[in-house]
Image (cartoon, rainbow, N blue to C red; front, top):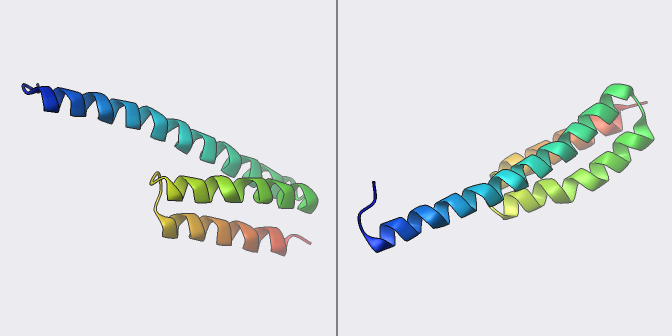
Length: 87
């Protein structure tokens, strides 16, 4: 257990950041799931709209440090590739 005042404050700050990051990660995953569902249904128009909504969310998560920048780029790239492949 933390003894110093600064260590106790650090614990409070970490807990607060963890909550914010959980919310951001959850929000990003929701948008990713919507893209996955649209791809699974085979509806290209819905998939394009879902990807267009998900892309800024994924990039925002990377910008805020929830996921790595390259991970975000990879996700967006692979989704775009799959959407494009829908006939």
